[in-house]
Length: 95
Image (cartoon, rainbow, N blue to C red):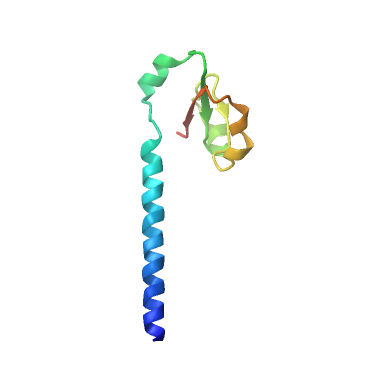
């Protein structure tokens, strides 16, 4: 009886993990991507905000940065997401 319980528990946990992974994959697929060339052609466009989400040390040491990009903490989206209007296009990059 005890082994059956643990077997069912393991099966339930595996199912939950599978569902969580599937959810994350769908979320990634729903986020539009933009190429470097497309972004370059859109620089200066009204409503376009470029956010640099690199780690602070990587950002500080970087030789190249996109002009006008704002540094944000990717781990603390809640602290900055409300700074932008819903009609703005946010382009977040990390490398």
